[in-house]
Structure formats: C-alpha cells, structure tokens
Amino acid sequence: MNKITLITGATAGIGKACAFRFAKKGHDLILTGRREARLQELSAQLNEKYGIKVLILAFDIRDRKATTEVIAGLPDEWKNIRILINNAGLASGLNTVQEGDIDDWERMIDTNIKGLLYMTRAVLPRMVANKKGHVINIGSIAGKEVYPNGNVYCATKFAVDALTKGMRIDTVQHGIKVTQIAPGAVETEFSMVRFHGDAQRAKTVYEGYEPLRSEDVAEVVFFATSLPRHVNINDLVLMPSRQASAMIMHKD
Image (cartoon, rainbow, N blue to C red; front, side, top):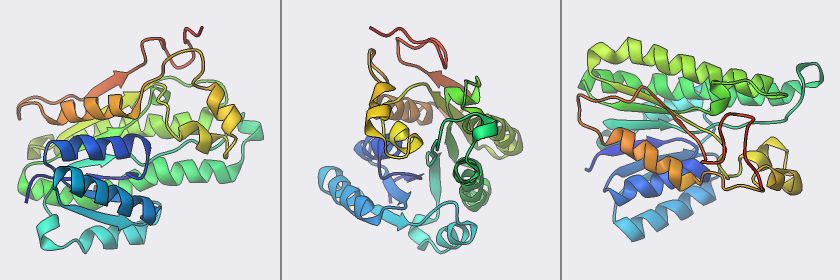
C-alpha cells in the first residue's frame, strides 16, 4: 500500500480538504467522521479521481470505547498509519462563563480534547514501535489568544497547544514528528456549528474580508508533512492577510 494517512473529521471543511490534498499525492486514506453518507460520497470521489484506497470509519471520536476498538480492529494492511491528522473539533456557543451552556462546554471538551487524546492514544503506540510517524494537531489562533465569550473553546484549543508540546517531548526519542497547525478565520461549517445553525449570524463572521479557505490550511498541513526527515515544524500559525490577531481584522 501507499503511505497511510488517517484524518479525523473528514466529512467537511479542513478535514475534507486534507483528504483531497493527500490523495492527490498518492496517500491511501483512513477517513473518520460521524456522517457515514458523506464519508461514502467522499471515498467514491477520491477513488475515482486519484485511484487510491480509502477506508471509511463512521463513529464519534468522543466515544472512547468505539475509538479504541475501531483502531485496534483495523485490518492488518491498514495498521501502519504514517500520518495522523487530528482535525475533528468544533466551537459550540459564544457566551460569557456566567451565561454559558454546560452542554456546549461538554461537547467542546469531549471533542476537542478528549477525542483528540483517544485517537492519539490508539494510533501512537504503533508509530513508536515502527520508529516513524507524524501527528498533526489542528489547533487555532484561539489556542494562542483568549477572546471575549470564547472562554471554554479557547481553553480547549490552549489544551491542544499544550498537548502538542507534550507529545513532541514524549515521542522525540522515537523519531516521531508532532506539529500543531493553528489557523485564524477559516470559512467552513465552523460558525454554523458555533451558532447552532443560525446561517445569518454565521455569515457575518466572514463578511468584509477574505478568510482562509479549507484548501489553504490543507496545503500547509501537507507542506509540514513533506519536509525531510530531519526537519520538524513544531508550531505554525496561519492567518488571512486581513487578520492580525484573534480579534483584529481589517474589514471593508
């Protein structure tokens, strides 16, 4: 088989764009997500366009038991994952702490932190045994700067930042690369999810300037994984040209 790349949250946005970018370079792909129909459609498109092998795994990474069992049960030919892209993540709600929805908090913590940990714990031991592998964690500018009403979401992305550093320390002696890619504003389903399906409110987030596209982030992710073996990008912040920080944008 070709080099195997596993992408979580592959049904849309950055995860889907990464699937196309890595397929174009001949990677065989393991794609995970909760929406099986979207995974099947994506698999068919990638196979037809690039002739690669695709294994789809429809489950929720918040489910510790499912994540552990699915990865442990991979067919032998799919076990040697070379690149893990921990992309699955979300924001839910935008409120002060005192007005926050605890269900929103738990959804973000369970997906952005625990889901990332479950998947990494399941995949990393075999990378260590093989003395090769690359873990890409999709972070956020929200993991570098806290902004108004972003409290818990920012906390989860600060956790991704810290976990990436911890993984780098824990695996450096085994030849494993670990990288965080931390984008600013990317026009995806992100704001629709954050605002619980309010399309008008979500639209305003990206008005008056050109945000990043999913494909821009996927290009940077692929670049990070394509460097020589002796080169590792620890942390990379990627922003639209019109965005200087989490809260400062130049809008028309």
